[in-house]
Length: 77
Image (cartoon, rainbow, N blue to C red; front, side, top):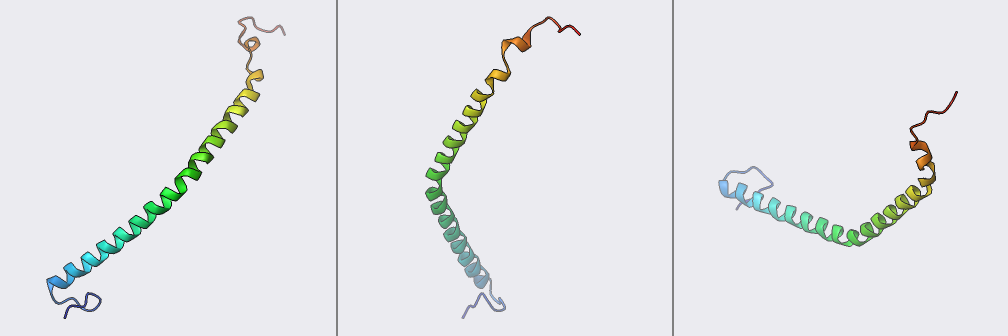
């Protein structure tokens, strides 16, 4: 009988162990994908809120950068 958790004596045991590990890895990957699919809508909403906040901040600071600052005449001392 082949027990991949004890001393491996046959190559088939190593193959069996590799298949078990691949199945476990696939299950973890599927779980991660499921979690990300649940998280995606909330993440989209967060991005939209952040974009709106950044746009609001940019619009609030527009008065600081008017054409008055772009004049070529230097200010007198």
